[in-house]
Amino acid sequence: MRRLFLPLIVLVSGCTTTVNAVVTPGSAAAPAAAASPKASAKPAAASLPEAGSEVDLAFWQAHHPAVVKGQTWTYQTAMAYQSRPGDETPYEQVLELTEIAGAKLKFLATDKADGGARTSTLNGEVGPLVPPPTKAWTYYGTEDVTVPAGSFKGALKLVAADMLVGGVAQLGGTIWLVPDTGIVKFVTNGDYHQRQELKAVTKP
Image (cartoon, rainbow, N blue to C red; front, side, top):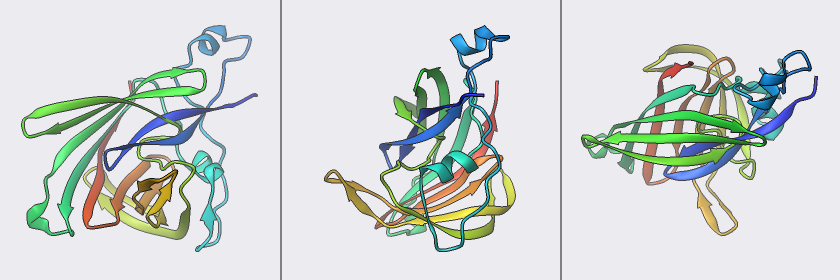
């Protein structure tokens, strides 16, 4: 069966990032699915690299779960200067996959803070918070992690340093990825520390 790699949208530290999702067109027996794709295909199981190995885009495609049109991810987000708890400004961010069209995915991001909501439309590739393929991430084995959505055993731990891409600063940090769930936690580097923890995933 032929598969297409589609872009999905991500919001990381207020920036749009690009990452990839895999979409399987319908067969001749299901032409409607091919004409109006609503879900990505679940990637085949893949072996893990050795700890300390740098990963590429294929790693994210292989280990991130399939995404579905109408699916939402809710993250508890907090920002603080130099990680001081008293400076944290917590808010909720909801990411909804609104469209799978050809080689593009569209995401509606809603930040709920200070009694209001700010929305934006984003584009990307693999899944929510998945970093752009231009950033180098290193796999550091597995680690158990607990977030508002629950406790996850054996989350894949990935770390990246800050870097410049095309003259634009991109924050590095640490990501915990659960293959059948997606990114459950993301903590950035730097003085302006941002932490995002998964609260819920909802499918239509």
